[in-house]
Image (cartoon, rainbow, N blue to C red):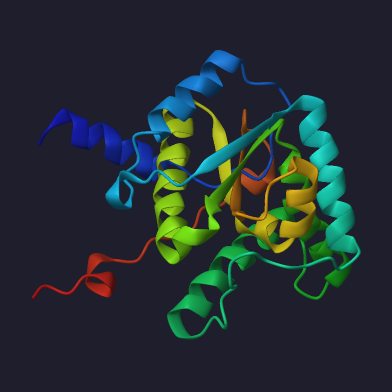
Length: 223
C-alpha cells in the first residue's frame, strides 16, 4: 500500500475538533504553510471562491468579544440557509457528538446554564489565538459554498500535519452581520464558517472525547 495513503489516513484519523487551546500564538511562517497547503483544494471550474480573513492575538479577542455580544443579544442571521431539521441518523450523530462533549466536561444534560456557557465558547473560538473566517462569492451560490467546504477540509488536514489544533465552526455564520461589520466585508461576500486554530491544550477534557465514523456500508452504494 502506498506510503502516502498510510500517512494521509493517519492524519485524517488523528484529526479532531479542538475545543481548548493554550493561547500560544502560531508563527506567521507556519500559518502561511498551512494556508499554502489548503490552497490546493479542488473547486468547481477552478473558481477558488474562498476568501479568508485570518486574525491573530488582540484582533482575535476583539472579534470574539463582538460575536459573543451579538450572540447574547440575539443578533442571529445566517448568510447561508441553516438545516431545516436533524432527523433519523443525522439527529443521532449530532446527539452523540453533543453528549460526548458535555459528558467529557462534566456538564449535566439538565444544567441549561452550563450548556449555554459552553455553547458561547463557539463565539470565543474556544480560546484559540487565531481564526480564519471563510467567505464565498454570493453569485456562485451553492457551488461556491461546496467549494469552500473542500477548502475547509484541506485546511483542517493542513493544520493537523503541522501539529496544530483546529476546529471548523459553522456557529460563526449564525452571526453573519456581526462578522461582516467587524471585517468590513462587502455584501457580495457570504460568511460560510470559521476555522479556529492554534496549539491544542491536550490536558483539557474537551479535547479528550472523540466521535465515531459511519461504516462504509452506511454511506456507500455499489452500483
